[in-house]
Length: 212
Image (cartoon, rainbow, N blue to C red; front, top):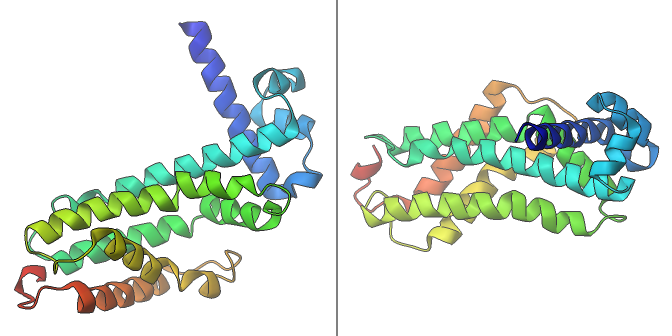
């Protein structure tokens, strides 16, 4: 059991070290020895866990995407019991999603995707399945519950989730210059409130009392 746990921990250290090196250097410039040094393991250990540099890259990107996804899924939890003021709950969730989207880990992941997509077209599917697709599904589930109890206007929760995320994330690529410019908290709140306001104009119930 201890041996198995140690192997898992070592693999995680390698994947995180690999992501850090790939994010700094890009795929072509990164070397396995530097990844081993970053992970605190011997170079042969890297090859024992992941057979070659390309495999290491794919798994490192997948691991980074899954870690980001888990944080974003946790950010949705306040919508399970949003309280009396749905607007405040949506804004709180939206702001946390934007904060996570703009952190260094997420920006590095997007930069890697942009720079290496031609050589590794399959990583787009990996990142999409471990990120936007799963997040949209989880958000749709929470919005569906709000629709059922009359807190939101009846409609397609999958479409509603897709539109809310687009309203939140859409403005950020230009504002952050594709993840190269740090956005302040005030700016994130401006984007959040604008997104939620537009979303509620479309999805608030006709009496609007259930969102206040």
